[in-house]
Image (cartoon, rainbow, N blue to C red):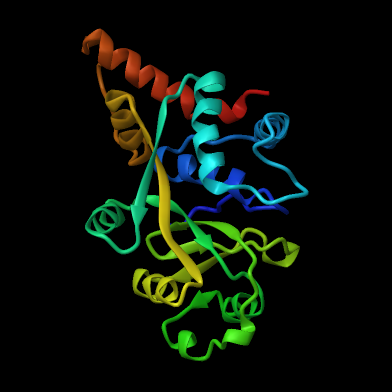
Amino acid sequence: MRIPLYTQSRNSCAVETCFNILRSKYWILFNDLQREYCKKEAAEDWIWSEESWTVFRFFYNWFTGYMYKNYNIELDVTTYTIPSDDFNRAFERWEGYWIWLLYAWKWYKEVREDWEITLKEIQNTKKEDYKYYWHNLFWKKWYIVAILWSISYQDKIIKLSKDALVAWIEKWLFYPTARSFRITDNLLEYYLIELNKWSVFNEIETMDQDHQDAIHKAIKLRWIYRKI
């Protein structure tokens, strides 16, 4: 079942894709106040602004430091080239990524109207439909978050297959780089992923201390959104 994903308001696409990756992969959720606080810190650090563009690579590296400082989570940014063997393996693991839309104007608004971007639509896209307009999207398996600063599109997702994504990249409508996050603590990452699969762990008190600490931290992280 597809989960509703947090959407992206004006110029906050880089921020929201970070949170979507953590939500999708680890079910670490953040409430509205927590996301706004992240934007506030990013603005104070001159890494993000509502009025200007964000350099996605810089922002993702900054976000790893933000998560460590505020939540004691150590993240690595994982970078993939689309397509590549590493990307294909991560795709099969249901990895969620940010992808970079380079031309987000007339053609994009038209092809998404039916909530699916297909291979056939590539042949109907003309150069005059392009307008250089960067936008960061969250993409997982076959779907992207469907927000381009339009209220009518909130909480929607667009179907986009891997083959169609690769074809759009070949036309340079999407950039061939995808990014995700990985928690560097292997035990913590393991328990977060297993809890996201609804795995049940019995007799936690019989585990060694490292495993107990990891599972308790994983449970705590999944409840972050309830804190003010």
